[in-house]
Image 1 (tube, rainbow, N blue to C red):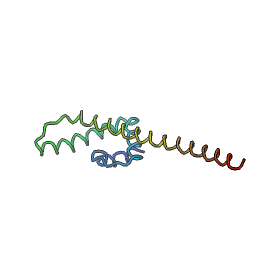
Image 2: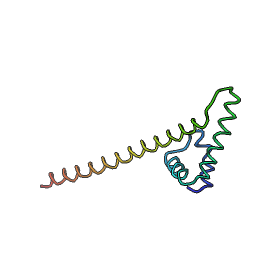
Image 3: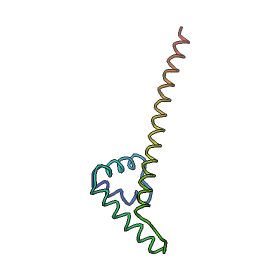
Image 4: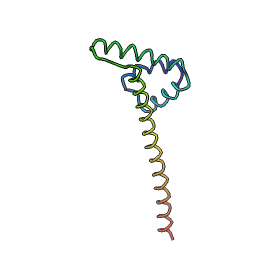
Length: 106
């Protein structure tokens, strides 16, 4: 993901609407690009801050952003775990089927 794509995806991240692949690329880019992370912080503070002011709610936006980023990392990690587990199950299934075919043929 490049900086332009990252910035385009910031509103979707704030709204919690990024799909897994985009969320993963978004997180990786943010870790590598301090300028984009700063842009995310600014847009988050403006977007959420304005909403909170309108609602009259108390807020700690910096902490909320960190919570959302941590949650995004957790979602990516869980999804990757399911993908790895699926791959392992596929390999086990193929081995089982090859063994079963070998048993039938012999």
